[in-house]
Length: 143
Image (cartoon, rainbow, N blue to C red; front, side, top):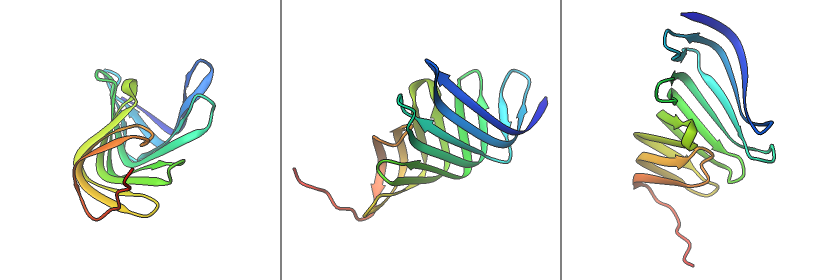
């Protein structure tokens, strides 16, 4: 096991930053898995370098074999453009598919509404999402 402190990593595609990650500490385990016991903060950028969303979790774990991230504890995802925020206690991020999902209870704060539910599948920037079992009061605009 290797321990690294005060990490700031950048994931790039075609010379553009796509994801910025900050962590106070992580442990690189045998096999390439990574444990972030003190939490993680990530920023996601579009193809023009504009920040689309952020993700914060009290704890995180990266499963190298599946190329899958798991955030636990207080997990928060913010969509900057839509001014929406997702809160849950556990969230998975499939980086190759740019998707996030959970089977846990979720709260989504929109500009005028709060939606509750159990289970969620979404784009990583929260621009499009489906709550599996929604609850709460919210307005629906007729078209």
